[in-house]
Image (cartoon, rainbow over the protein chains, first blue to last red):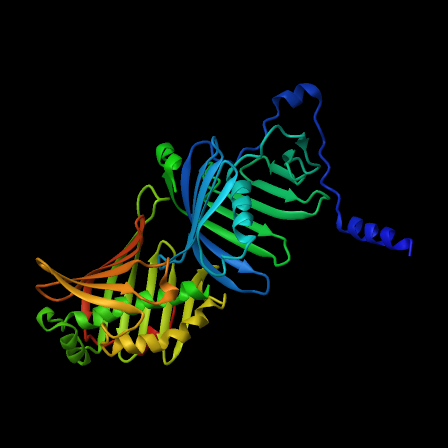
Length: 222
Length: 211
């Protein structure tokens, strides 16, 4: 019987994985190292055509609207069909999530928070300073943050325009992988999000339109 | 997805039912006249521009597409941009296709199957029962050079989704000009039809093939 806790501990440890090793540069270089920044710098509303690929092969397509103000950390989002039917609408302000519309299957309790977390991961820089900054053995520049839930966020960039964000659980299990590919520095032209959950899913996001964020409007947004 | 698809079909029904009856519309005779003359309509095709307004959007999102209808129940709603998709109902089967990997593929998310449930509703619209569908309360209104049919949902499953649907017909040629789906005070979908052709033969492949 005394072995039971040990077996459980071993089981959980077995689920943990080792994070990629970051080679930190010597001090003079470190001060010059700029973290990759694929995040929004100004308030903006982005409209994407999104292909949803669920585990098991199910496919669907929706239009995603995301309005983000990284300065105030406020965001609004909506999901609608090509036919214009709004299936989901939510907003986060001062850390409070307000869901104004959620039709099935977007009415699951955890859906709204997971979606907001995904949007933040894509468009908003992690809070605070990175814990580590340096290079991967494959020479990509990488910065690593640990968020308030102890999840680990890596933002990495190769020598060109390839930028990725990876979020790991506290014990190093890869949960999200986001790949940006765009033209002329527009990271949001094409975004791939791979999620590893109980039911894995992939979102292929193609930019339709960017609208400038209206700071006044955002402040009064319902 | 089910409720969303249900409501979508309701909207589709309203729109093409309106189109079916538009040419034959005679406001003074009301819904009875609409029902009586509907039998003369065999096919419809039209282009449309959809304007989606929401509070989250600084300016409306514009979509464009084509609409086809053939008696008794076949329809095709095709969105060309910004998101390519096609909804086809033909011979008792409803399918939705999306553009994926460079080609049109069937939407296999399962939600489209819910459309079958409301095909009974479509039958109701197709037989000219604008004012007899228990899901909507219909009213006619003359507004200068336009005539409006105002559909107010009465069904529980419409609550919080659609406030009303306003179909505007030209009093001159009786063609459907716009369909305005008002979801809330800050969200609406307006569909403007143009180049409408009535009773022009349509190949059956329109309701079978998706490129």
